[in-house]
Figure 1 (cartoon, protein in one colour):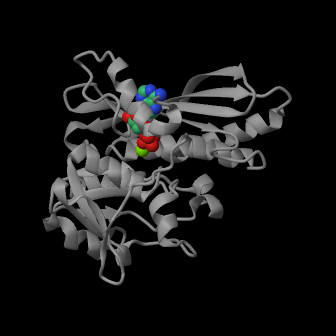
Figure 2: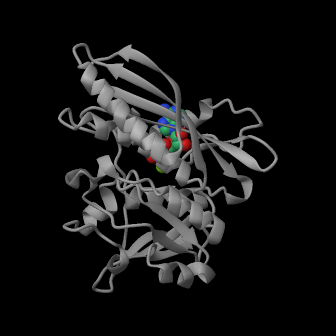
Length: 297
Ligand code: ADP
Ligand code: MG
C-alpha cells in the first residue's frame, strides 16, 4: 500500500500535480520556488507560500521576533530564487489558547523588520485557534520576463555555484536570522543570467536533486570545493538544509568572472543525465549521491 511515509513529501507533491486544474494562463504551477503567472507586457507575477510550525521549524523557546523574521525571510528567499523582487504578503496565524499577546506582537515585530528590509507590504491574513503555533505566509512578487530563472534550465557543462557556506544551520541558529540572497539574485540575473536556480531549504543534495530532475541532467560535485560553515561536516553541508543560500548554474563562459568577485563559490559541474548525480571525494574517488532532502514524513 502507498503511504505518505513511503512516498515522502516530494512524492506527495508529485501526486498532487494531477489535481492542479491549471488555466492556460498559468506559466508555471507546482514545481518551482514560486508559481509564475501573467502580469503585463514585460513582467511576470510570482506567487509563493511557506508555513512554519512550532517544533519543526522553530522551538517554543525561540524568540518570537526571530520566528517572525524567518517566516517572511523564507518566502523572500523563494522569490529571490526566481530572479524576482517581493511585493505584498498575507500572514495567517494558528494560535494556541493561552499564548501571550506579547508573543504575537513579537512575531509581528520580526515580520515588520524583514518587511522593511526587503520592501514587502503586509496587506492581510487570517487568524484562527490551533493546537500549536503555526504561521503561514503567502507572498507575491514580480520578475522581468528576461530575468526569470527556473529550476529546469541547467545544461550539461554548466558550472554549479552556491552563494555561501553550508551546514549546521539549525544547530547554529542561523536558520532564524539568515539574510535571503535577494541582492545577490538581483545582481546575478542582470549580469550572468543563471541557467537554473533554487534556494537551499531542503539541503544541497535534495535541492540540487530538484534542479537535476527538472533539467533532466546529472551532476558531478567536488567535495573539496563545497564551502562549509565552521564545524559542519560533509553530511551536514549536503543534507541538513535550511541554509537559504542560492544554488545556481551558469554557462562556463561566466565562471571566471563569478569566481573573481569572491562572493560565489563553484562546487561542481552539470553532467548528462545518464551520468547520474555523483561527488568526487577528496581522495579522488567518485561516488553516487543519494539525495537525502529533508522530508516532513
Ligand atoms: P520550497 O522549498 O522552494 O518552498 P517546496 O519544496 O515547499 O518548495 O515545494 C515544491 C513545490 O511544490 C512548489 O512549487 C510548491 O508550490 C509545491 N507544493 C508544495 N506543497 C504543496 C501542496 N500541498 N499543494 C500543492 N503544491 C504544493
Ligand atoms: Mg525554494
